[in-house]
Length: 292
Ligand SMILES: [Mg+2]
Image 1 (cartoon, helix red, strand yellow):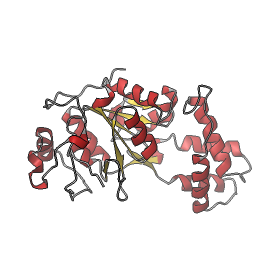
Image 2: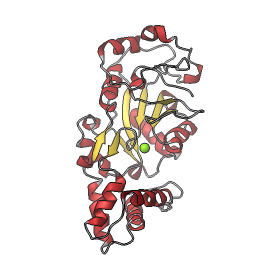
Image 3: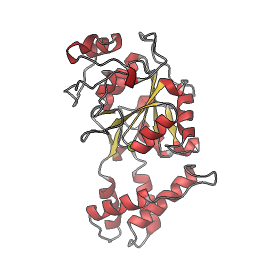
Image 4: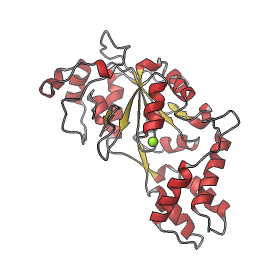
């Protein structure tokens, strides 16, 4: 499926070079005139921005031709939380685990995952992901009578769009980027279940086939092959693309090493001292990000 081509928008002469660090400093008082794209959008696209203040260190990347968005933690979040879902699965079998304990165990087993397909580090596929999640569930819920049942219930739960919500800034930001004519796709370390999740969320269902999923690519972020596949999906060179995500290693470091620009999403507080970051996706459309 070819990437969705957006409507052509006004472009600068330097549109092929995404080099935010070299962009001129923005005077906040003159920001609406900083670029044609931004001034048009700011007058026509409503935002629910939580990033009202614009530090003097903000710079622009309006030359970007495409964006790759991470899914979990960037576009969507589980409701109820992962820990609550695991605790409920245990409870249905008469095993009781507190949400805090479930959260602590999940963090351990999720981080210690070491199962990879035969092609080496960071390689994966659907079966590998299913085995990986079975191991995580068994680690987090060791006391349930029927571990296979718990796994199947949780596997189905997190493949259900009703178990996920979009962050409030997602819809307006994606509509704004689409209006700018940039190309956008989702790039996630999920598995094929993500297709059903995205299709079931009104803010995201227009992505259609513009999903790049690690289990289908064969490699997980931060592997270079994942980003090469995502850029190819967009029909763009890595230097034309910005990766946006909440994981420093997977979404930022990996993308930069593959030749993309990258932005850390940090909604809960300051981002990272060495990398561009935003507290709201609205900042992407407004053509600015923050350096600590
Ligand atoms: Mg994430």
